[in-house]
Image (cartoon, rainbow over the protein chains, first blue to last red):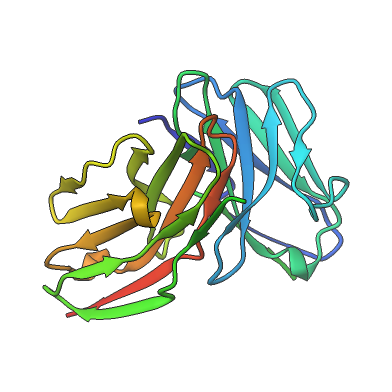
Length: 115
Length: 114
């Protein structure tokens, strides 16, 4: 199957700093990428959907100015958590899909801890 | 509205027991897809199966089997002769025809004790 990577796998930062998480499709062109957030013992919640070269579409309740998403190429999307606070601590998972795919391929996730 | 319900929050079994994880879904789409994923403690989602709405055949893969019943909107997952390595959180998910939105259930945590 298709492979999606995320970097970093975990990050600890101080409150008020910004953190960038990368999501890469390694062996296919990802026309669409998705970002999910998962709080402990909870399900995955879709934050936003991004198509290459277009602005991301955010789900209701997700602050687009806080969670900046860039999908500048067919293999890379980035999520930047700006001015992170402890309540942003979570597991962030990206997924990607190409035009020939009938599913989403999930990355391994990034665990963010904001102190 | 699209919705996936996994009523079982946590299940504990002893190794070698069979266990069934329930999944009930709601959708207005005539074409849709159902998925099961395994999430071990490492966090990475492991794809287990995809089933489209037109294929109601049950599927077996080793110790895993899936029972898709459109009449009851259910897509249940059975692990036969469970093993400790099966311990994980299992998610059922639903997507529409364009795969642009996945709706995940709340997950079922399976504990398999030796």
